Image (tube, rainbow, N blue to C red):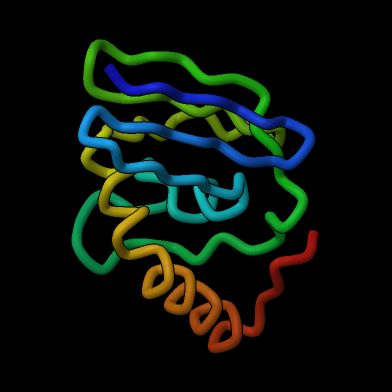
Length: 114
């Protein structure tokens, strides 16, 4: 069993895994790295850089079977299914993935601000 706690005011999702691992994710981080086809594309090299999500929040979480969460964001995005394995990957590679995102924003002349 995985424990998920949403802190709407702080715009954070806190997860506790059975193996004792804990991860806290900002809503912006989860939104811009959504596993949805809208963000990741339908194949290699099709991912898009999502700008303007610094203030995005999470309105709801839906459990998907025993393997994932569907996150509903306040900007209307709700198609990403975040598997427990994907959350573990995001936690383990947080700094690298975030820096890659920041670099992509700069390269494309985009901003985190709406």
